[in-house]
Structures are given as C-alpha cells and as structure tokens.
Image: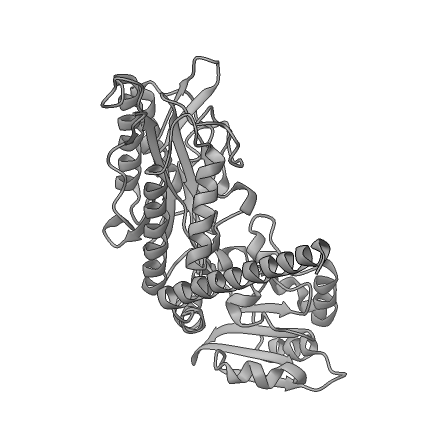
Length: 445
C-alpha cells in the first residue's frame, strides 16, 4: 500500500472518530436538556392564560370582542399565544365576553380545523369548507352579536398588537360596511393581557434567572487577567447554554454582552484582554422552553497587584448602584407608575455623584427581554416613553438596574448597572432570586 492510500485511510479514520465524538456530545446535551427542563408547560399555561387572564383584559380595555386573523408564512405576532401558530389558510379567532361569560370561537379552514380542535384550547372551532372565507364567517357572527367595539391588531405603539396587514384591514372595513367604525385598536387589550404573568410563569422565570446568574458567577472564576478576553467569557456562557438546551434571550451576536472597558451600550463581546483594575460587566439572558426570557447582570473587579479589596472609588460606585437598585425595588408597588420607580433610584444617583445615564431604570421582561408592560423610565425629560406613565400591577415581572456612571482616564464612561429581576406582588415587589450583594473580586496573582 503506497503512502497516498495510507494517508486517505488515516484521514477517513480521523473524520469518523470526530463524527462519533460529536454525536456523543450532542446526545449528552440532549439528555441534560431533557432531564433538566422536561416537557414544555406552555400548552397548559397558554390555555390558562386565555381562560383566566384574557376575560379580565377585555374588561380592562373596555372592548366587547377581539378578532385576530392568522395565516401561513406571514402570521400575526400574537398567533402562538392564541393557538394560531399552525394556521395554513386564513383563520379568524374571536374572543368575547357576553351575559353568559367568556367565549373563544375560531373559524378555521377545514384542513386545520380538526387538529386545532384536538388541542382543546378554544370553546368552539368551526370548520370552514374550501372556497369559503373564514373572515366572512367571523364578520357575520360579529354582526349577529351586535358587538359595539371590536378590537383588531392595528397599533402605533405595541408591535405585538400590530399584526393586521393593510389589505386585511381594508377587507374588514368592506365586510363590516357601515359598522367598520366599531373597529378599535387592540393596543390596550394586548398590553393588559401580556403584561401579567401567571404564578407558574414566574416560577419558570425564577429558574431561568438563577441559571443566568449562576453561570456568570462560575465564569468569573475562570478569568485569568492578562490572558482572558471579554470574548472568552462570552464563549463560556454560550457553551453553558448549549449544555442546558436553552437559547439566547435576545440577539445572539449581543448575548452575552461582556465589557471590561468603557461603555459600549448594547454590543457584542470583543477580544479586549481583561486587565487588573478593570470593572467587568456581563449582561446576559437565556430563553427557556423557547418561550420565557431572563435578563441579569453580574459585575466583577480585577484586583491590582497588592490589592485585597476594591479601592474606595470602585466600592463607592458599586454601593451607589446597588442602593439605586434597592430603591427601585421598594418603589415597585401596585398602583405606582413606571416613572415613579425610575425617579426613586435617580434621586440616589444624583446624591452619589453619578454621571448622566441615558437608559431607563428598567423594563418588563418575560416573553422577550423588553416585554409588554410599563417602562421604568421617564423621570428625565430628555427621553419620555408613554409606557412610563402606565400603572404597575400585581403579576408583572421586570428587569431593572441601579446605576452609577463615572469618567475613565481615557475619557470614556463606565457604568455599573446592578440589574436584577423581580415580580410585583400584592404588597410590593420581590426579587426572583437573591440579588448580587458584593462586587465579585478576581485576583491577578
């Protein structure tokens, strides 16, 4: 056998070995994921959300009926919240309250009606034969019921309530004729419904938050000043995500955002080498069950030679940020507005000598990192969001910061943003997991 054939055999053996190793690793990851998470609870939670929370949302938004049109390839963003994610032909979903209570009724093309009915999500699934419009059937039903206000998904401010296309709206107007003036935006309805999370959902968010924080603390133990980079930390966290079968809480290229230098805003981790004297920020979130999202930050300080603790200025910045976070939590009560929470921590920022921070104190978190609900900002006139005037209610979940920003020697700005997650209870808010109390210290020796 000549050398050429020996080489081919060796290469083939090598690739087969690599493939087998990769297959084994994938199997191990699948086992970890299955054992840790189990079956997704979303089907039952979705059903409960529709039957328990949606009737209240209809009442709060003061609408009689909500019409959602679902279809293949260009579906409504709310589709998987109502069971319409598998729509092929156009289907019309109706939710309404009347003198007999709450109802959910779907007019579905016959090709999908049986499978949808089997899910047992809705009170009634009406099969619509080919060549007949489900939307026409729904409009006829609406006319018979004489609803005064019909919410549809057209919204200027809420992307989750803006799934109705221009041509779909035109068609509805034509079908309703003189009654098309009864159509109203579902902005408030979707806001009221999605902003509240069930206790079961809060438990899932708590589990996700704990993993998010634990992995950040774990990776800090592996940092070698002068060798490790921000990107190395990001790679470690990506590997943990793969092991546990979870995905990114937001844009993959910017999750996690690891930064040991000057502020970069929402950004990707770079190859900057971590050095003594650096304050390291990790902003990290994971998505579990392909549904619920966490958003947690953890901070560390790299000790310089001879230091056994952070210097006084860094300690002051950390304690200032932490105090702001605690003040925000205390202000996060049912009946308060988002702007009130923002103001509570910014008062402390000013007293502590922090530079200006453009970010809101916090935001709703749940199905996405920046979820539907009150914005915890608005106390500074430079950037006021309407959602900051919204009322905080029991069952809402937030990710929120305590800030302190200062100037670096190179002219850049560094911000400590003590970000935690909390749920609003009847008598106030509580952290989902134990908050970071001490700045993590990394030795340079």
